[in-house]
Image (cartoon, rainbow, N blue to C red; front, side):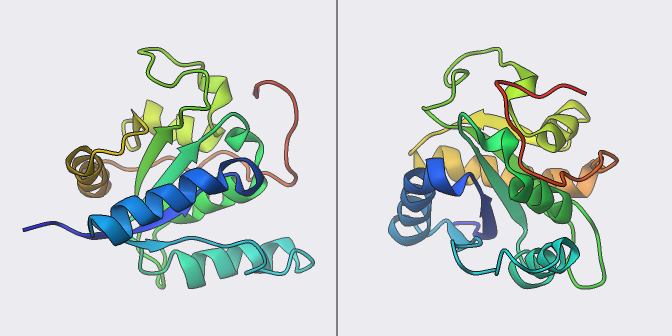
Length: 181
């Protein structure tokens, strides 16, 4: 029997929409190993106050997800919404239980299929949680058995390891080639 999890996908909308669509089609529709959820372009009015956007992401999109998958492309680390989604995913609230966290290096990322990666080219909050052994980092795969295993491992980790969410939330999108503290 297949173990299904409700997966929230966090990604850089302008750069990685095709990977998100492939992920959702391949694993949600084709192989049925996940139920999907993500914020689509235009779902949330960008003119709303920051705290309202964060609350809507947490309460409306992450509420019943059990694992957040972060698609790590070349500029994913720069996006304030990715940072907010990761932060909301790992917070335990009355309305939204904490989610497992899985980062997938996309083929567009310079660390794809390499054994080492530059931690300053992935979202900082994802890095913090990989460092404390809460998040799992892996490489993009289209193998349904491998993906199901990765998602389930991330789900199980949320029960055995505490995340870290101490980093300040992004106020704006970032720029440059890499982040630094």
